[in-house]
Length: 214
Image (tube, rainbow, N blue to C red):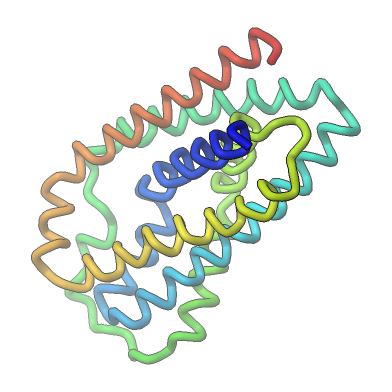
């Protein structure tokens, strides 16, 4: 039970950091929230639904692959570690680059009240990003045991949905008003560097684990 709890906490913490890293999903929700808070919240739900899709696919795919090719477990750890280090470096290096949405917030607002369409747009944005799939697989490989108990397999998608939806709900609520949006942009460099540093450390942990063969 303790191992299950630790795995769940590890996945939750790593996924929270990944969700908070700026990327296509963040920009999509932010831009939507600038025009309409309700559409921004619908987009946040779409991101959470996309997280469930990735979680289920990663759980099923990883378990099947590990059973068929035992050595693949270590290979994914090594590749995932290298990619997370690269991703952390990219986030760190781009910390001072302005978000694209900050340059065109004066554009004419979109028609509001299209919650269903915005939900689907958020879902499509999430699942169409191949980098997200790699991050999910890497984090799951780092924290999941070789034999995943049923309770953990059921709990992981729920936790992922809560993290993705919760974070992007915060983004939608914050960036739909002027003052919090300005505050985020003011401290963006520090936030991005913190996220990039933690992502890089997670990558180093994966690589070291792969080298040791466990």
